[in-house]
Length: 255
Image (tube, rainbow, N blue to C red; front, side, top):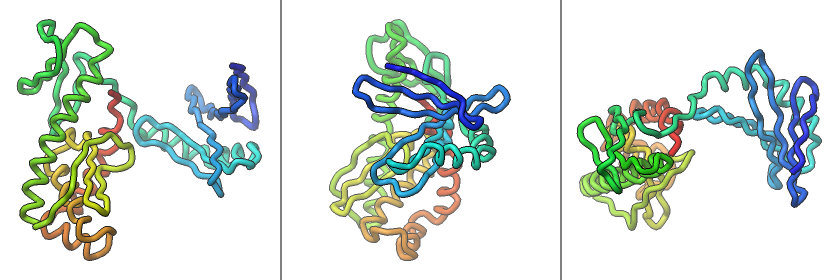
């Protein structure tokens, strides 16, 4: 792999040329002691320049049309430089899941402790989650597996209750880890939920359950849809804002 860095219009351009001749380009903003890497992605279906900054981790991506000259992407980045720096500063740092660190579980802080006597799985006692200690590199994946199990159990219980009181049905439920959605509902009634919901307060999880069940009647976000949600979750507006406010913090945990 060939790696070359050159200075262009106040931005550092890094070119990575792989053995298959594909090109991956990064433009770095240098601001005082801060370096912000910006991934420039050429997408076949892109018709204009799009800039996105992840609130969890502050990853900056610029998507451009396949034949757009890079200098135009540079000019776009330079024009939005101050905004990029501000949003990067406001982003939530990524958080590693490891021993003696805490993470949220149903709105409360849980501390991870290693237990030499454990050989597999995790066990919670109060505000402590005990994990096997023979391989620290597996702590993150083990905690994630435990969270997924807890999320499935909790979400299925919530679904049974709200499906009954709302007089609605669904075909299946699955638990996933998506970056952009808390839940989804297919036309056939297949429900999917983000396992990170178990890290939030129970009221937020229940709101998402009601939200997705309401899609069994309205496959949109019309006035009728929100009226149905409000019937079974009167505080949905407050809960919706709270979930949006907590999203970056919950997504920042790296397993």
